[in-house]
Image (cartoon, rainbow, N blue to C red):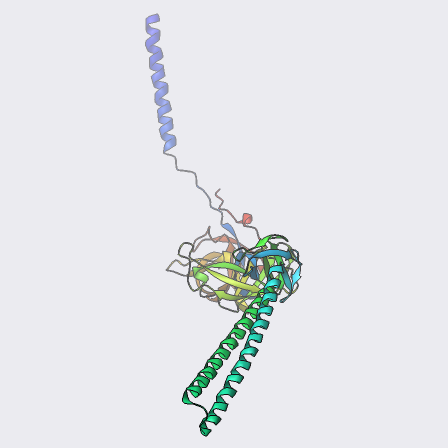
Length: 401
């Protein structure tokens, strides 16, 4: 009996396995469950007429309009420095004075030397007059036969020598006058005058220090105007031109804007960064702006007071070639259509639409990356003002049921 039980169990297991296999094969051949796709919800709006400004946003650091390093022409110990850092200075103010005792002595010596030279010139002029008179007397006597030719030659030679000596003394007087002038000029140079209006930005020495021609003593900066250097990329190079308006903001005054203009543009681009330096000048009559401040700069290229605009986010690429397009909604049920457009100026948020759509067309602003042409959608119309405030997190997503 036990011998029969084992084969029976094996047969039963095989029969059950066969039925399980048949059932699984039947299940795999059953038709797949149908997935129903719901039309995607998209945000749409209509083009609007607005004032549009084409501009670029840049950053830079403010610099002084001009900066002067003060140096001396001659060495000397510093006697006085009447201005401190931050003081306002006018052109012509005495900003540093060197010890002038040696130069005062040099001037006194030059004045004395000039007096000696003038006295020697006066004495020589007297000698020349005497030689001239002696020569003239001999000429008269020669007519009477009293003087000899040798006496005439000696008198004439003495007079000629006296005239030459007088010229020499005159040259010595001129030399003495020049020395005195140089001495006085050297004395004046001990007082260093400011070459420009501005503020004392830095004192690099102090009273008692030895000033040398190769050592800077102080720095004076002019803060009206100030300037900033910004760098523009290659695609904006031709748009930037001299005298263009620039709007500047700084962190110190978050609620104020400062007007500037382009004064210089580099004629070449840096091959490493592919950018060109642009200098912007900013009037600063109140001296509110300080060198070193971080500046945010907007350069205005072009302004259209009445432009038909759409959000930049609504733009997509053409399917038939280079250029731009938008998706519009037409029909009932709503179907997407790709419409080629021509654009104008772009301020980074809005773009001018020159052709391709009209003010009645519903344009997809959010969801245009998730749809294709001829697709059914559920449009949700939103006014332009609200479109510009819509966060990207509200972008509709595809839903499969």
